[in-house]
Length: 428
Image (tube, rainbow, N blue to C red; front, side, top):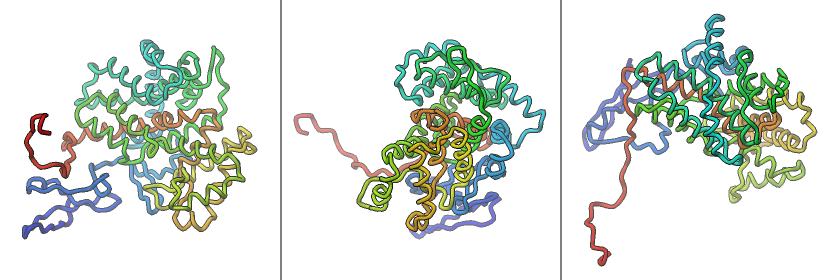
């Protein structure tokens, strides 16, 4: 309910708009009716616009808070697993023991993909980017299930969501195996979600990979930390595409395309590439000086965050996970990780970084961790896709479930040429 109103004066006219308050966060001014008055608000990048109402995720960047359905990310990462989190994001709460068992069984049953998808994958060269493959394979999935899913029916949306959550690790592992010149590995029904992913990723030629539980836990935690992050570019893209009534596989494919950008899902890959460029601890002072020089285009990747003006809460958890993996894999003597740890020390102690709150973010630690797990850097964003699919499909379902659902249609301020006549080509 609106508790107060905002008044706007334009050309001696007064307009009044309701102000709403959510559970947390800044109040919002409902300007929906302003278009009827012949005006639109102007907000490039939607930095001051709440495009929707959602009950899924809340972020307080100033305080370093991230909540999934009200649960702090720190508690979820320590006390639950990704199947708990996936159920919570989509259905609204953590599952009971029986609900979780049913959910896991359904996901495991849906994990295999159709054989025809392997033929689609064979059409890609092995050096192709995994994101391009994921987008194409999801498009192929849409062709198999499009007629069987009525997005206007809640039960069909639930079924589609379970299919996407189940099949995205299989598709991701298929892309990796193809890039290595190997045939895809089928999922095993007796394994957990994270175990199945590692099994499909690293088993080869009929030989199953040995599942190290420290590494399995790390993968599961990475999925949890990246499962959702409110109305970012890719989530907004899924909602925008989904608002047209498009197929859910197509809407998620659109989200993957948005996530591919280095400013979004590609950040951890860019971070690892930066560490490789620095290469040696001895060269760190040079790069730190360059990062402080406003005239130098070089930027340290993996430090600071657009949303978090305090420490990224996911980074605290990811740092612990990172060191657990490094200890398990014996990577602390590797030159790449020495560079990373020295950069981390400097960022936490150097006055310049502390003053500007350029703390290591989740991408800094996740890139290092994924590399230690044996996952190539060009697959990092695909890992992000795997985790974020749960959040995307939860927002898609939430949007279509609302009574006030409508197709998204942003407005613009046109600043092009005024009306003019077409001249004959000889007079142009």
